[in-house]
Length: 222
Image (cartoon, rainbow, N blue to C red; front, side):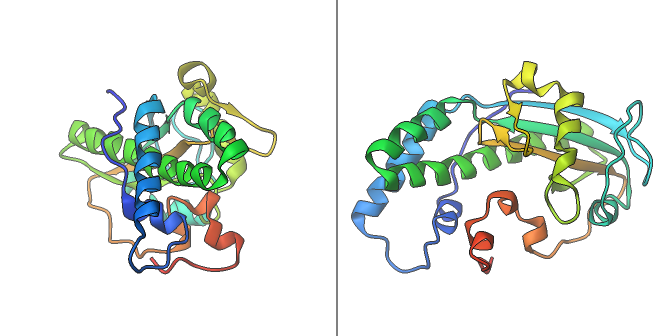
């Protein structure tokens, strides 16, 4: 199953850039275009995933990984299997952003926003492909370490079970941050029932772990 980057959501970029609405000046539009073009040129999308049997409160089938958190338990309440997945854009966007910081910080920030939107698109496309593969069963949305009370420390299980360093070239710092930065891990549930509609909240936001709004004690309002 090929990892695909097909679109960069401009509205997601603007939200991450703290754009508060109104007409976008031509020079900003041009900078956004450059950020998107750079990501499409530099990104090398890759993804891995595995399926495991799931029972609440027990380790995933064939592993010692016991997912923690009441939020995740509620999220998977109708599921008897889960998919662990990981996706990355590769190292080149990080290297380009580091170079841009030395000469044009605004371009570096825009590139960061474009990368965040891009890796979510890769995950969206992967989940569409997985949904087709597992039909007629249903898939849930994604739920990542750091969402709600799902501990970020459990990120290490994804690295072990998905062999992320070897298969994706991704490493994990002592503080559980992933490198390259534009990398996502998530749990997706598999069920015979469609997922109940979830309300938008910080706990279900794809940018929760790196949200500039939360760092300022605010919410984006989405």
